[in-house]
Image 1: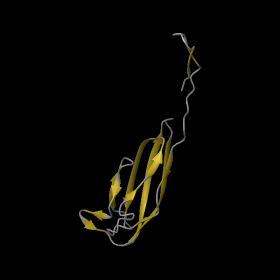
Image 2 (image 1 turned 135 degrees about the vertical axis):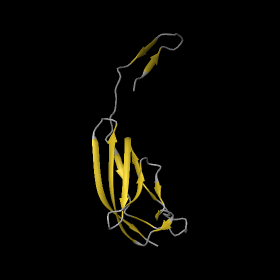
Image 3 (image 1 turned 180 degrees about the vertical axis):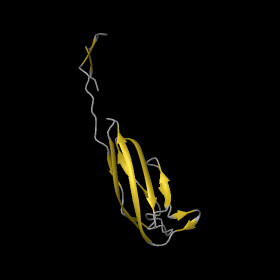
Image 4 (image 1 turned 180 degrees about the horizontal axis):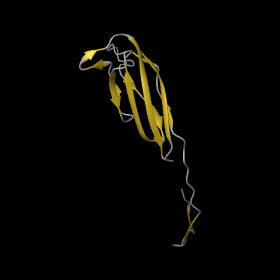
Length: 114
């Protein structure tokens, strides 16, 4: 960021020193969703900010990968190969990076409610 100052009534302009802000990435991963067509939490979505990259993988209890998303716009609708998955607890593994070049990872569970 920089600030430009101009003298009133003239074309004289001066610029301030430049300052940069590097925000640490923030990622919110809900722990439940309910794909039951009631218009509330029907898809699993991530929220975040200051993210350069993000990738989430969701697995069932047997380790089968059901979903991969690689943007904050990625949404899991609770299906795999076109079939509704049962109400259960699923595992996620998520990697992401910030604009500072640092890499992060997190893992946890998601409860699918029907």
